[in-house]
Image 1 (cartoon, rainbow, N blue to C red):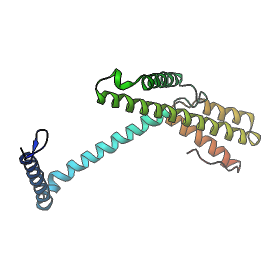
Image 2 (image 1 turned 30 degrees about the vertical axis):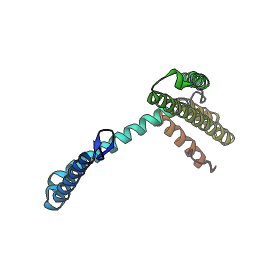
Image 3 (image 1 turned 180 degrees about the vertical axis):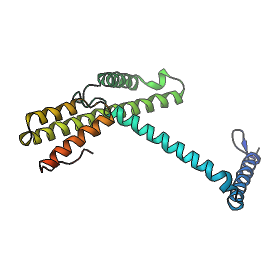
Length: 192
């Protein structure tokens, strides 16, 4: 019994796992030196890298679209997120005050519920704050430009701002504001 480390894992099993890891490491290093890397390893690693970066780019676009979806409506257009935020906060508060652990016997479920609640509340808070800042950015800068541009240009900027519903339209509206500012020698920072 002195060989038992914890539960079912014994020293023999750990030594077997270490041997497997060492063998895989030796095969990998041998492949690097033998030219097998150029034949199979490099294309495979390139494929994996390209797949990960492509997936990362897709995630960034979806994130940007979701984040900018309610800016054109004044930052508060995403009422469903706010409603879920309120419901989630109320439920979390209820469970915290009534003892969530007594309601759920499995501590992993408690951990999952708390982490998902915190992540959801964090995401909705981030989105609401971001939308509010972006809304203030466009309102403020369009008003700064208003005395120096025609009524039609002012309406055009307001329309671009109000049509923001994804990352592409956000970037287009911001470029338009910055272009008008540059044309009229007014210094305006880009949104960040």
